[in-house]
Image (cartoon, rainbow, N blue to C red; front, top):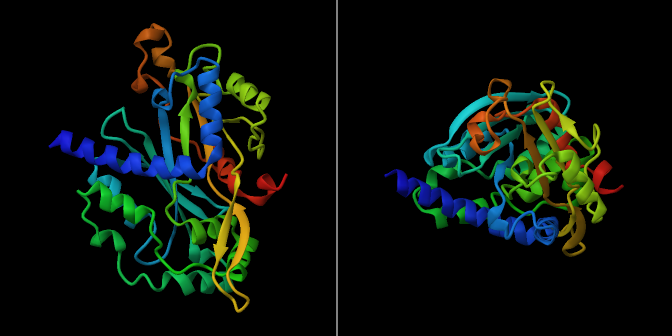
Length: 305
């Protein structure tokens, strides 16, 4: 039974990563750079620290809906996080085996937004009159993959997208991108020295012309100093919006991005030989202060600079 679940989860994750790699050019750029520098031999050598999804906190959607897919696959819900300024809530989920990535799911507190923005969101999400995950065969990886890459509501208009973006860039990203993978994360600490720290790896990235999110500083560090993160700035993608009387409109909007994480060894395992260190010996979970700034990888202050 466990092998069946692992096979199911592998299929779901492979589908997510395939479309993500096609849509996010920095994945290929970073991978090619790592291969060229001898850090890995192929993308399969990269340990995926975690993947992240964004959702809207409205009836039949949000965290309680999306998490069903991963709880079914053996993930366990862990710590919760609140982001007051961005009006977001989130949970992270631990995988059924260390060979799978952690999962981070965030949700916009829609009721905390202005009434015009709430109305704009409801114009799309009110058409979802029951939890769509309940209609999926969760044991069918192909069906789950198709769901995660299918529209949940009609294509937004550019005016609605712009209205949402003016108040919540997160809301605008979700109304267009839905459940597209927001990012995947390279575990830098497992790379060969000296590139096994975010500081050194960032320097390598920047030397190849890859732009990094500098919100709150390029390097984001947890108060305990054990979780260090950075991320690329989301590349813009050409998006087609609904007809508003003058035919379909195309505009460039932020897509997804790549994150990098360094999880340092916990103090109680500091004397453990390097060749004996596994995931359980490193700092786990997430840090709200880090994540708050990582969210901005898709914000216009970053993508327009």
